Length: 78
Picture (cartoon, rainbow, N blue to C red):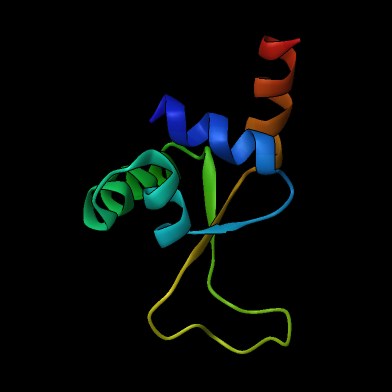
């Protein structure tokens, strides 16, 4: 989970698809998705289910750090 948070921190504010995160971490997509859902439940990441045009993704989710998590991570890494 810490690797995922670190990756999203370095890409912030850009959101990443689950598949992109799994490639970066060299892990299975379903495993990464389960970790992301756990992080979402803890309030550290947020899912983005719409594209920039406002259309809902049918089978994909992009993920980004919450602003609260980004501020906390920024203070720790400084």
